[in-house]
Image (cartoon, rainbow, N blue to C red; front, side, top):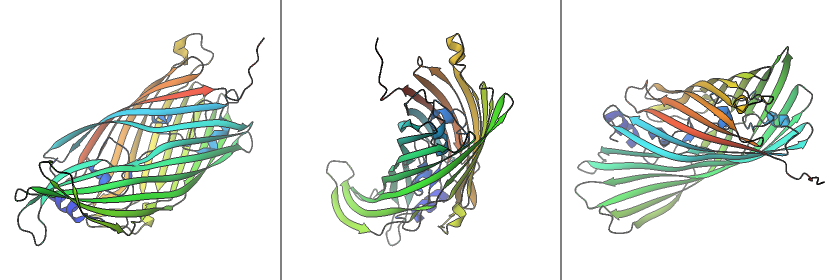
Length: 422
């Protein structure tokens, strides 16, 4: 993909970025916007929540795992001692800079989670999920100070962060539940620039490797208000601001443009770590359950990026906000036919990204739809289609759109239960 003149100057100005950097939102197979910070942030939740537009802060369920709000773990059914969930997604993405268009396809395994009862009024969950993804490949041309002629540059980025978490939820009464997560976030991000021209027969590679890690925690509360033939559930979550510890090294290498020789290391230097910030995050949700037949959910989330002083050439920060709305037809466990157990739903979301490029804010929006098929009485198989776009409102930058198909599987098991034989 060839960048426009504005993008060329912008990206070249960020070469070997060494100031404070921040995070991005909304995940896709690959994106030029993952150049910033630790890339695209994966939203919490499973396919069950994606089916409803990503809503779930106020979601309570006996047979699904809700890591959006740890207070929900207290609602896990006593009929099962263990729940298991994992997801796999296949996505295609298109980027367009006005002159050129690029397409990508990617297979992803975003999470694996387990939940279990710890008492009549409590439950817990452990899991491994992707926290962020860096994946870009940008071609451009430019001139370097003191060097004559025009050079070709390829920007490549890969890696991302993962999160291992443990969560616990406790019901304080029939209506009120609280919970907390503690997690360890870790990973490696590599940003590389390859420089060459028609005047030389080799390429110079500058690889900036960043190793990141931190402990993190968040808390949540849920309150259930019974109403005739229905119930309203309110949820609140809070993620504390945290700094990621960073260790960096810079590798400069040379390689024959024909690829006939292995890279030669020209220099290897340990650099001062960059400062990455996970912001204070507030989440609010409400869910209306109508007689266990269907559920309407709405969430609002705010990340307080404006508290950071991070700024750079042609970019700055603002608070990010995300609003989502979802509908789900619940399974009828008294149904006499298989069709009664099938679930389906849809959702919408819109997001004001934290990133402002050349005075213009980057926004995202999308919709989701899907259905769930019961696997006997021991699980649920869900298929969710998501269609989203971002950057369409920006004049001189990339616009993106992607389509993603996600498969989510939930298994419900009885572990550590002594079986009786006659």
